[in-house]
Image (cartoon, rainbow, N blue to C red; front, side):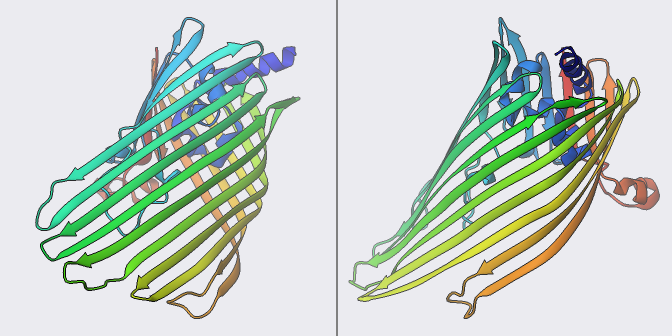
Length: 408
């Protein structure tokens, strides 16, 4: 038990260096094998581990809708926090690709709570978001109404060696538009809904100078879109009524085994292997048109499956100076991609293919420390090939992502 306690303290010391999304992305997938303040949304039980922090995540240059701000504070025997703009609507909602939307979820808000009970730290994250858009009638437009909502819930439990996180989210979109004049009326209505859920479990096992981290994750995303289109006029002309239904379903399971090796108090090596990974998705489309006494239908189903056997991850971080930390990582993944696409109105034959692919990605980043302020940058390695603009004339950004963390 004493060795476990020492291990936990050393991880906390290193977590002051290993923080934010940018630092995670600078190491790559191997970052899943260490604890980090950016883990609190996946493992809410870690909320109590980090207090008196304020973090800004700038995920894409000049894209304010992709920025986030969150903070954690101790309140009596609890940790309380907030998170602004953490929702990725694409995770839960099958959006309409053929229509432009005015609504979005940039205005979402999360509350976070953490509390220690017995030998566990328990955490809770609740997220709510909504948006609505109404357009005034003009030039025959009778109605344009959009309504979007989101609700998310995260629960977690953690102790010195175990992290368990459960997340669930649901969202819905209603879109309606109609035109009319003295002779003609047209109505178009779409309803879209979706959910997302995930379960993550990891365990830290100390064995000599190494810490092994087995991890399992299971995720799902069922989604659907229903659309109805109708026309009519005052002359009695019969127009077709069109209805379509689209359903999507995604499931994923990953089995990983990672390892930590602490070279010293400020340097860490991470390595891991994806023992097995399976991602499966289906896309089903149904279409029906009713015109006079005739019904026209179309239906097809596409299936996609990706099997990972195996994937290799590695990462490194070292605090070279009191003001500078360097990070790097790599990932090589071998996959079998299978797809089956049914024939439909536009294509006469089925398609079934299997492909063997492998990908390699390299990651790097820097962390700059100024007393209580840390700036983490996920670096674009192209800057070292192209050189600064004044020399090469290239306008590539220095970094893909920047995170700011202030500890007070």
